[in-house]
Image (cartoon, one colour):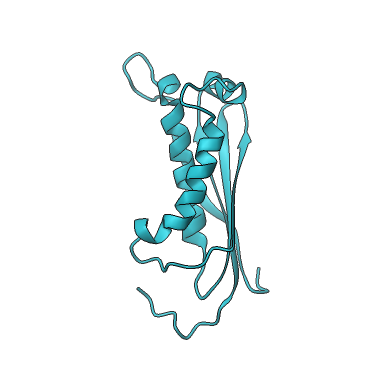
Length: 144
């Protein structure tokens, strides 16, 4: 791990986003609460928040840091769900990996709970895909 012992503790925030492409019928099922495994977005939200806390376990070179705040939000369109995670910490190192981890795990959980509806007759996922996972913004102390 990188030595951060000489760095000052400052407020850090990162916002990450990512998208899962789904069939229109699956988006309709999510909207209308017709997913057999449960509320897809609620499951994904809890999973994303848990992912923030477990980032150093999944990403070996990440420092364990105190998390002050984290949120996971979802935005639906007719053919996709966009996840956005915001993470705040007062720390010596950034929270980008925590935000990216939250988005990725949230999207994977959506896929897991809707996969039954996304498969074609051959058991493949021709329209399902996770993409565009990126940092939307980050800030450190007073710098943006």
